Image (tube, helix red, strand yellow):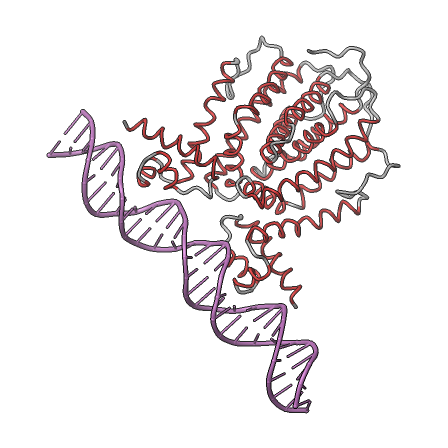
Amino acid sequence: MPDQTKERIVDAAYRTLVRRGYHETAMKDIAAEAGVAPGLAHYYFETKEDLLVAAIEHACEPLMKAWEEAGVSLSGPMPEDADPMMFARMGFELAKAELKSYGGLFLLTFDMFGVGLHNPKIASAVRTFIEERRAFVARITRAVIAGMAEPPLASADAIAAAIWGSLHGIYLQKVMNPAFDAEAAIDALGEMTMAFATRPRTTSREGG
Amino acid sequence: MPDQTKERIVDAAYRTLVRRGYHETAMKDIAAEAGVAPGLAHYYFETKEDLLVAAIEHACEPLMKAWEEAGVSLSGPMPEDADPMMFARMGFELAKAELKSYGGLFLLTFDMFGVGLHNPKIASAVRTFIEERRAFVARITRAVIAGMAEPPLASADAIAAAIWGSLHGIYLQKVMNPAFDAEAAIDALGEMTMAFATRPRTTSREGG
DNA sequence: AATCTTTGATTGAATGACCAAACAATTTGG
DNA sequence: CCAAATTGTTTGGTCATTCAATCAAAGATT
């Protein structure tokens, strides 16, 4: 049952990498967790890097599924008939939902970011990871902007980068300090965003 | 000249850690960069972790100095006579200025975040690092809120967490992809924040 | 049906390299 | 002469990756 074996190794990699971190996890630890000889892990995955990427993709699957069940796909187009503001609101709700269920994925992802700082193969995976998610936020942002009384000075991409960045930063604070109230922070981000999106037209804007 | 030696080691640690990353840097590499025997690095710093923390604190010094010269201190009180909105605007300008000068510090900091995920000693340094900066943003936020026509639902701490998080997330995107337009993203964050802070009083807010 | 063959899956030990930390020995400066 | 500074080696352990050998199952051949 070769397929099940590969799956078992990826699954063991996920658990082990979450528990101990990339640099503190040895290939033989993952193999042991999978109940398999060290060599077999290399039979299926040439390098530890490949296993890290596979583990993250594997761990993202349920999240992707949850989004698609909510009618959203990371890379697909946004349904044109839907209210963009409703989509934005739903995005923040989903972001809060992630907090409850995907602690392990956060750890793994942030670990990947750290490794990616000095590892080209992982760095490219990181760039793809970020780009996908930022583009997703940007699609919603564009739709919201289209409905604004006074369009913002900033581009949709820049706003999306700021919003995705905030979510990332909030997750980071949560991972680093479980007592941190990430829900409140996401609510604050949502309040700011909504206030911005619904602000009335002004003839002269203050500031220089 | 023991003091200069210690300084030389910290400086070498900074350069080496930025160039190669924590896990790819050996104590002997730092020692070599400092032109010193491996044992001497351990003479001044018991563990590699201590050296990482020291290198970051060392690298933060010029940044702190820049802030203090601008009349701001990370932990001190905010001058009561100043216009809070002006402080907020200046904060975003300083955030943009950091982009130009402190690339190495970003790398080191993000590396520290990664290491901190599974290393208690570093994790505590990370928590302190984040907490200091978030508290700084929160002080400005509190002052801004005091001047708002309609106070926000979210607390100043939650808003500060969202704003600091956004800055962090923007820096991350910049580090991972130098072509990323981080200035535009910070401008977008600033525009959102300012629009939020200056929004007019509303009797009934939409949504629910 | 019985035996040989091939191929992929799997094993576990070996390789070659690395490193943090400890330590004993030496130098320097007061 | 002493204590702090400094050296460079040793220790005791780590690990990713390789590899030769074994195993199982599916055909192929007789």
